[in-house]
Length: 142
Image (cartoon, rainbow, N blue to C red; front, side, top):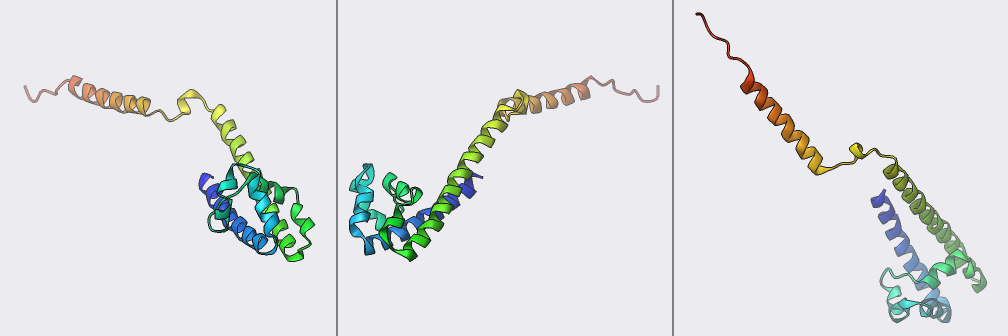
């Protein structure tokens, strides 16, 4: 599940960058405002080349602020991105809850413990060796 979330998130990052490039081309002042409000402000110009998100840009899509721009094509693409982004967040939330639930419902002996596994393997070997040595030898013809 981690790999799926990572690949999906990376795809969203590329999609976000594409939308930011479009926003910068049509409304550079709005694009600049998205990166000014948090710690990414200094690095925000790199968002046109790298996969950089800001809290402002995430809120821009989640709160549907793209609809105020009056760009129907951009709004349509942004709405699809919003749906995919919220789906990804929901997937992360559900996967985390399931992982914690599974972990909390395992019995202690079900958890993979390398030392316990080594002890079991070595005890098995010792029992085999001890039983081989302890077996009485059959005496031939006497």
